[in-house]
Length: 145
Image (tube, rainbow, N blue to C red):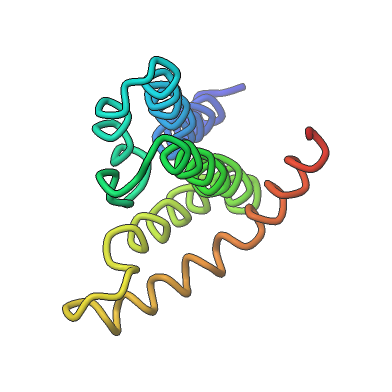
């Protein structure tokens, strides 16, 4: 490989590392799971917002556990599999584009008076971009389960 090939590999590796979120996802899920296993509902409630936007104060232990499982499933699709699909299809632009769409949805995709029109479009774009990764994630979960 020449200098150009090495630079492309380094750029792809750096973009992939920046876009993937599996390490943080696993760490946060284990932190909440550990708190639940220890019977420390308050610590579990403190950690849950690192994974999802639900109000942890209204949740009991089983509901927090369910929120963790659902969040890990969704974020595995969004933060890992979907990003890798778009990286395989579009290289570095695919990786970064997918992460930009996903982040935009997370920031303004929910309905609020301020972002109603823009948020709706961001959420639909994220749904379309996330479709291939979600289908692959479901297939992989089925095969591994």
